[in-house]
Length: 223
Ligand SMILES: [Zn+2]
Image (tube, rainbow, N blue to C red; front, side, top):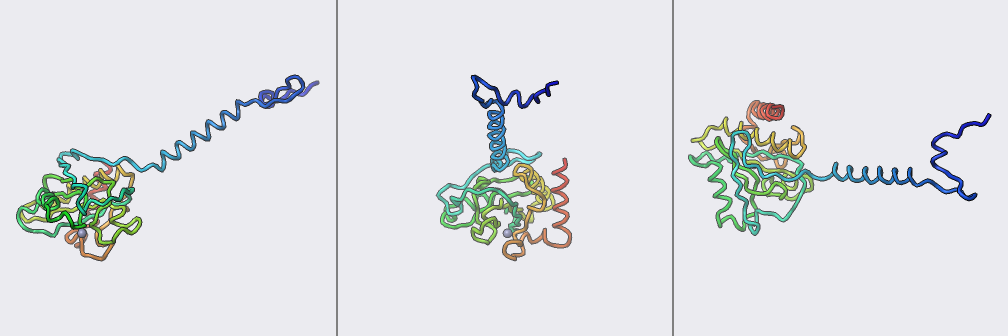
């Protein structure tokens, strides 16, 4: 009794006029799978697209990017890896997000290498710089994967005529939104302090405020 040839062998080799030829179908399939693997690999490592939000929850986000020729607008395109939290430490009445946006845009700032991405107050958010552009806020130069080189800088307003707790809550919503978009974790939310030892964000660093802030972010991540 003849032993049946396994199906795989039958399709792989055929004897044509005494010459063995290789069936190219399996090779084609392997090549296809290899290219598919490469492509999905590229997709996996491709940085998420930078966002320009107009609204986060019920908070309006005003986009007003710095002129590209300003010193605060670095030419460094980077991958977002961190969120760096600051407080303005400006308690003056009226020192809200719009006032800080005006300050960053003033011609006096044109030659100053000082910048950050968002300022948040109790009612609105200003977006000063595209997220994919490195800014100067973390006091750590352009150290690779540092606060400036890879962080989104967020300033929370502390103006005495504003509602600080609401500003913190608005910042938590912004942070949750950014973590989701850039596929980051709660561990990637840092304090300015972490990069240079400066007591910033000052009020959030008091008592349990920082842990409470992270818990707020987590709540918005889950919702
Ligand atoms: Zn700071």
